[in-house]
Image (cartoon, rainbow, N blue to C red; front, side, top):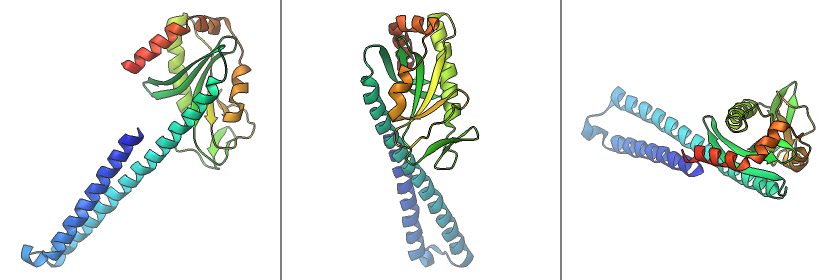
Length: 229
């Protein structure tokens, strides 16, 4: 993702450079080309607008690339933390679905099913009047809606395997930001990475979750099939 965004950003940058070079060429040869007065002014204005638009798009792509890189590093840190949980937990990473992808799925032998969305933001993440804010502002994406959409999708996928609705606990995990204790938002738990292991170990078992655990190989095969597809 980061490479794709960087490539797109470079394309916009090159286009902006091309327009700038064209503008210089036209300005230097305006008399030979018969350009003067309002005609030349119009070309200058349009070219300047085009350059601004292209540079703006390039900067947005480069910023998106930075976010993708930070996100990938955050996911790696969570993967390392999950690897330390032990054999009573079964972990799946980076599972695609119609809404994008799920960062991590955790099946606990005695602790239920969890869906994790990893965020690399720094600063402070907190719940204020039922809304998740990052550094005092709504994040660039609705993390709660993202987690819930992914949860509903995963619930349907697990139902195909377990034959019943399975309770899934969605969790938004901030790797870098400070997260004060807070109530969940629409059932989505908001925590810092430091409290992830404890949250997973405090999960409640259920008959259907146990059934999912017993069929974890089938779950992996089905979700990996989605990845290949």
